[in-house]
Image (cartoon, rainbow, N blue to C red; front, top):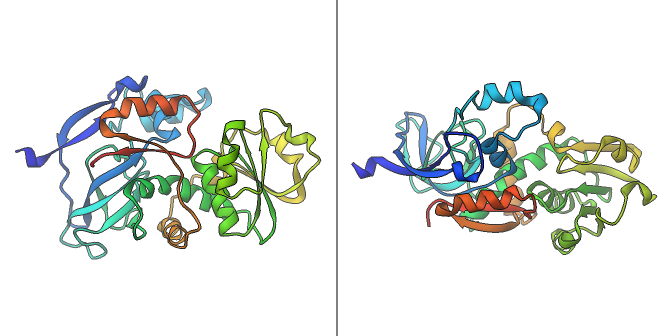
Length: 312
């Protein structure tokens, strides 16, 4: 009977990190065109903690209540991204085989990365992991990587252009610094706090601006592209530091609502394989310390990504 069970991290009410708990759940069985993934790693993103706490702007409440659940969560297992290995495949599956190491986005599969097993369609947002990439790094690369690819493609960045990345030390920002520099060949100026300046330089930024000490609008400098990776810079300020022909990108608005495409995940895999992007890991927690992990991310000071080890 135990073989048909798995452990999962669930939340059955909105609230503080303590609403999360580990529970025995029924192990999913893949359908004909599905695979069963043995999950090795997931992450704690800002999206995960917002859903857990239902900390969304009041103006978004009607939609959020419908999507997330009016009075309690519709989807009890969080986890927007994962990495693991295929344990079982459906009879009609042709793209994967048992033992394949994969990484995936669960955004279109009702989340579920916070469990020891996740069932997904073979045509879902999953693909083979880059060779030799640890499970934790693979899981951490998915969400931020696909977000950055989608946003930066809109800017049509050219070799040598000057790109300003606001919020350069978070999951999205640390990814954007690397991809804008290593893939597009841009000159990067990173905006972050004092304590994260060295990290920004390590990631590839040529210049670093400490937002706690300097006002962007007083620098007398213009950029070809400004990417607000944390959606905290007022557009009025952003416009003052962009050239007339420049491009302004906001992580929330330019991620868009269109359906995520597998091509974005495949491009991410290629960038990792070519050494142009390596996700920065701030902290790693075992599954049993999920409450502590959410507490840490709630503080709003994480650098890069926080990984959860589902199986060790």
